[in-house]
Amino acid sequence: MALQEGDFIRLRYTGRAGENIFDTTDEENAKEEGIFNPRAEYGPVTVRLGSHHIIIGLEDELMGKEVGAEGEVDVPPEKAFGEHDEEAMKSVPVTQFREKPKRGTRIEAEGREGVVVDVIGRRAVVDFNHPLAGKTLNYSYTILEKVEDPVEQIKGLIKLFSGRTDIGISIADGTAELELPPAIAYDRRWMVWRGTLVREIFEYYPDVNDVVMKETISRPAKPEAAPEVVETEEPVETEETKEAEE
Image 1 (cartoon, rainbow, N blue to C red):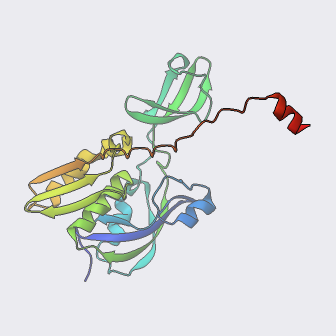
Image 2 (image 1 turned 120 degrees about the vertical axis):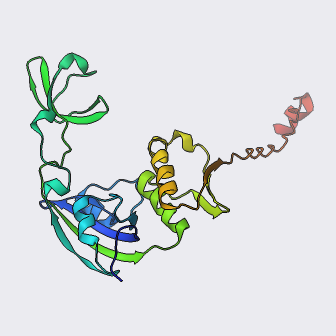
Image 3 (image 1 turned 30 degrees about the horizontal axis):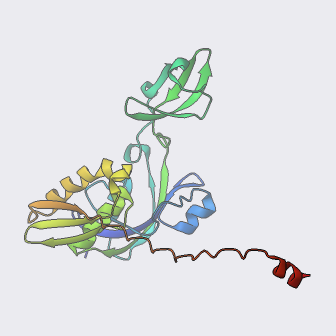
């Protein structure tokens, strides 16, 4: 059956800009290209078609395909990361930098990330365009399966948004419960994206009325007592022991 908007699928893909791979679900490809992230979870991703979980050009390509389909598609800038916008090039005083800026320095300002492309006198030219803006991209892909189980769908969304695979999920009586690992509050990516996750759960699962996030912290195990060391007094040296040693 042809895939359509609203279907969840497991997808394997590799994105290239020219000859260079910039994104891939394949760990070996990432290592070969020198973009491997040891903290990333590689492997197929679960996405919902029509929700823009992937760039529009790739999503359009997958609509109407069958499970098992594989192929390639060239994606123009307007369906990828947009055209390069000259107005996104800003001149910033070097005094706003903690350290002396140089070409290639990445910065964050006004909620946007940019890269220094030039330094002229006391001002730095910062490009706030996406690094792939204005480029035609190529994607190779394989549609592995359609994901029907809501629990597996939500697991896929969690991995997609936060990169985590250690969150337990159960759905019962209108409640989706997420079993969170300890210290997850220190995961910045999770904290940024969890609101989006909740919104999408309510949007895609009308029978879910509550989302409960439960973090269980167990009492640390008591350290084992060290074995008692019995101190013995050193023997007192006497004339008799001296003679014996001699």
